[in-house]
Amino acid sequence: MAGLDLSAAGNVLKTFYLPPIRKMLNNSTVLLSKLDKDSSTQDVDGTSFTVPIHYGRNLSAGKGVAESAALPAAGSQKYSKAVVPNKYVYATIEVSGPVVKATRTNAGAFIRAIDSELKGAMQDMKKAVNRQFHGDGADKLGVWTTGDDTSGTTIDDGDGYVATHLPVGQAITCDLIDTNDDDVRGDSIVVTLGDESATGFAVTWTGSVSGSADGDYLVLEDSLGYQMMGIAGIIDDGDPVIPAGGGTRTGLHGIAAATNSWWKSQVVGADDSKQDLSFVNMQRVLSKIAINSNYDEKDVKFLLTSYQVRDKYYELAVNERRFVNTMTLDGGFEGLDFNGKALVPDSQCKLGRIYFIVPETLKIFRTSDFDWMDRDGAVLSRKEGYDVYQATLFHYGDLGCVARNGNGVLKGINV
Image (cartoon, rainbow, N blue to C red; front, side, top):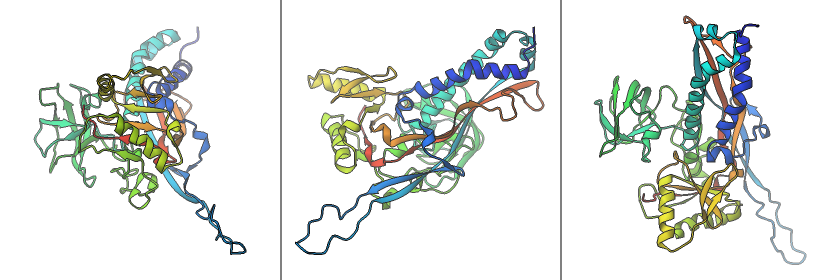
């Protein structure tokens, strides 16, 4: 029997694992499964995608004039452009040389040998991608609640689900970022999240933190500005607050909302002014979309929220004596009915929000779907200086928006 060399082992990874990985990562979350994933509609320009944005109409259309009077002055459609940076995310697995040697004559044995590592990497990649698509581009893992430079402080992520972002009891290398100007307050600190207490979660760390303040946040080491954009940065009426790829702060896709009112989503409520969930405020978001954009209620295909807000919606319906149907979206995701639209929960959605999403306005611009790195012809390559072989899964692309005002969000919901 021919031996299972590294080339053949790489083919095992491609043949047995790549299709399931793509299906799992593209379809296992509500948000990813419902977005337009057609990356062939845009060409990459260097390290970014340039997207034409139609934001204005011909203002002379429909103008009446007197008999024999001068015709209306020529008008035109208004266009701008958005620049969506390409982002590069990775996951790497390792297999020791002895394992490769011991399974060289049996592809099935090799698959079993790497199965645990691979499935773990798939789950972790899924969670990381989903987390980023719910964020604002910073990919915050935890947020300081007060200035504290001494190891052992209570943190939050600003949304009440820090334990879904940081692994409890596992050390992870992070940077602590100044929320106001992107300066690094703590460089390469090794952070460990403790168990939940009555007052929340606390982290301990090794390394130095200096000048921290309320709102400073943790990110993966050296990742600031290089993580993918998410709906918290897109479906809003302001600018994301992180560098657009390791550079200076800019508006979303290079367009500043402050000077371009058409580049704002429909927002009802505020994170710092909590209120109880109401049907009236939910309907207000739909009405604002219909009034202020080229889309209307029928274009909003689903509502996305946290499990806590989903439960509040069910409680509200019961208290108002409304019967709530369960709806099923394509892909098998179930949600509660609101005016014929599914309200679907996601564990990594921002806690006190409901997003009203028009999927055709959001696109995952790609130069590569999830794939194995094999530019040298081998999926498995030797780690320099070690009897270890590595395989790296990657994705090149970012989440972009072509009509920001077509989406809406209800903020500041009490849970």
